[in-house]
Image 1 (tube, rainbow, N blue to C red):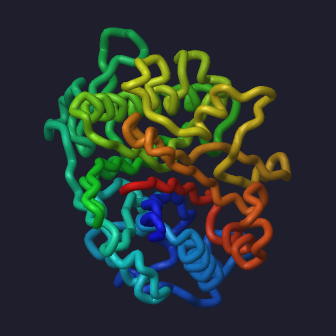
Image 2: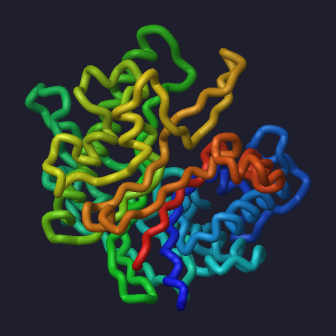
Length: 350
């Protein structure tokens, strides 16, 4: 009896300080100089990234904080060079609108398993913007503080919209995201509060903008995957109550009918969690407190039709995933590679 085809495996992974591991020609800086990771050399971080990518064996990885694209640098070239060096089957990369930062959103994928092309939706608008889900490199108008004056919102890291077709004929839309961070830096007291609220307002506006695009796809009957670093989760900070919902809940559509909601079991656990118990995907060192802080920030959300395929989600956490913990080389690589851990989804029949 023939074995059923293996499921399509999609991953999202935020790789910290990825850009600093390449020169302007996209060549890896695999040397003994320290990377931006604490007490980790560039060679060690790159080697760890290669180990994790090989172990995941994904058909496509949405890389968050991918290497920079600019006048002299190319995120696609850097990742494809890395794939050749590590002999990965993830040999192709595709990116979208470049960011205002040195952090891009780029899909690294196996061309034998799928094809992907940048396919942005929405109207290209000028500086005045639009309140009706403009293209993600444009300006979104939304009145968050009810002062009758719409806020003008731009993504510093425009979401990556892709049209994907698998080798077995499956088709779906994919949106890779890296939402606005809400954490202020280098301030305290009243200024900390002011910046926290201001950052959350912008974060929520970005999520509302993304949700409008999600609703358009669901109304059109598109199969959809929304994945990446949301810098958010239910109950993550004390300012959430000022706005009613977390941005994550907005994107999922927690108040929408079932056929208009996205599904991610880790997000659901956090929303329904008791005593704050839920999975985590990131681990940060907090110098003032001298300890580590863990958070659930990275998600893979799917449309209702994909959810009926009984997909399997996994967080590749070095301590909480038994297989990662029991494999010393992989465990160490996950710790060295980034402060975020990969999330995968296995989609049968795609």
